[in-house]
Image (cartoon, rainbow, N blue to C red; front, side, top):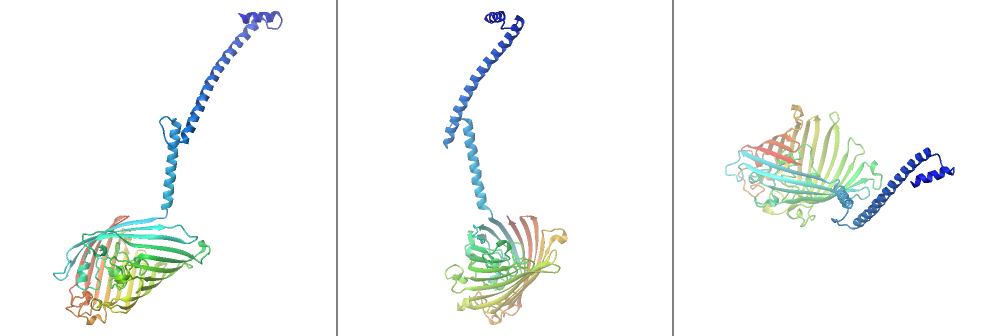
Length: 489
């Protein structure tokens, strides 16, 4: 009503539009006022929401200042803290992964069952024998020192069962280990199955020339010291050097003079302390070569850190890799050793040690896509063992020739010549009286087939034929049948 009177007054004064126009403007003004009222109401609501957000933000900030979670905290605070925790855990895991980068570990379990035919009646431990051996190795890289890379290596071993080894040893066989996998810690009770740290050594690899540009280096020097398996560094062979996959008789696993002949003088578990320096030259990548020299503690005291280097074993090896037969790889090694306190075959009676010196050769050469031949020779130049010369030859064939690419077949022959001094002996090197005159050459023939069931599981039937055991030309031939199961992870 007031608006109508105001409009009429303005029209009368000539300051307003006619009545029809005024009515229209009044409606428009009314709408504007209603929208303004709604805006004011919405503004009030927004102010309340902003205030609430400010309060919630303050609560969030207050909650984030505390590391603890509370039921009264805003949901956002709880979720942020949970996210922070997850991120921290991920960072910790990432650091652990980084710290483990480069670590290498392997685990293996091997089991062998063997039986012999032809051993004299009454031979102890000559029945069917079962044994197992488990090995775990760990390689830990250390933070490099400039261009020098270095690492720690540890090897753990456990097992039970001596296999047929004790039976052949009791009979005075030169090759006294038809089962090189047999292991029992320190020769303890058969009921003992303890884990030993067999190997623990440090190794550093130094690029040469020292202080040069590492990517351009083609020469390296490596230094190794600690307790180790000497055959990991000397007398290696690609076709005859792993008793878990290849030949079982020790005369094919290593040079018979060093292993079966006991020249290396290891401890009761097969390891010894030593220091090795090696030089590798890869200037010609197709024919790299290496020189290495080691000094080791041997014997009953030297191998167990009691008097390790008072009467050491010195070992030197030169090796090269050649491409023959149309570019196929072959490894050629020649070595020599000198043991200050070697034990002759009559040590059991004299308890006197003498200087022993010997030389050896180890060769493996591929002659086809799936054929590798091997050979070893050893000669004890100074010293008297039951056998002073040893030869081992053979070949390994890949299953690719019969559509079983992961399988392999191996055949080997070994010849151990009786030493000149032992031909006049009346006792064997265990102190057992001889009822024959030694003079022949003990021979061993072995065949195996490795059948792969899966990448981690292999079965290997094995056959061995031994003649003239212990140099006895009248000795009855002995055959050994076995089955090996090997699981590797």
